Image (tube, rainbow, N blue to C red; front, side, top):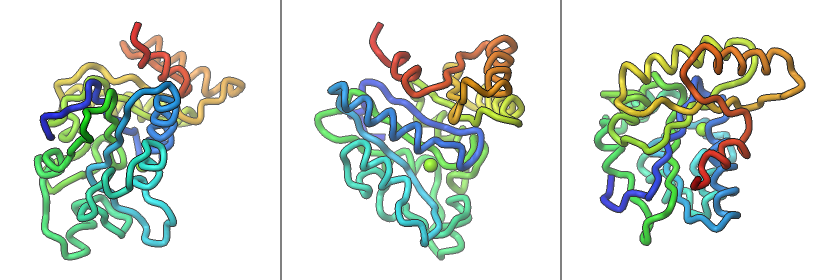
Length: 218
Ligand SMILES: [Mg+2]
């Protein structure tokens, strides 16, 4: 990663694919910008269905005010919905490593207050030929790691497995769990949140405004 690291580097990881990492990251970027903070978004690699109108890089770039090709380098766009190293192989592209992805992350000048890096898939999803989201997290050493999870059935299992894997594989502070799609009127969602909070030494947030509060200087 370039030496002009943002003052605060946030990595957004997920318990699974399609869990809302991009949605949470994009909302945070918009709200931070609305508060006058300088932000930038990065997606080190993305694979996608070529029939999709917009990629994660487009959605993040719309939110951060950057071009999609600044968010994800054009040569890391892989138009086939497979884990990135598989997609690259299937497309006949050369293999790449976690260190390659990390080295390609460059930040705007002047350095933004907050940089948000979105991972691919879940924490153990392959990102490169030699590593997964946890390898990238270890390489980037973010100031804050957000673990985006669903709120419904299966959430406790997915969060516990993800936290254990992160704890084993990366030397970073315990992630903050963000329960995306949390509905306070849903008893299961409330019970899942309470269970996680009472059984794990982890902070559990259930809305983007709650994450915003957490990001405000105290
Ligand atoms: Mg995404």
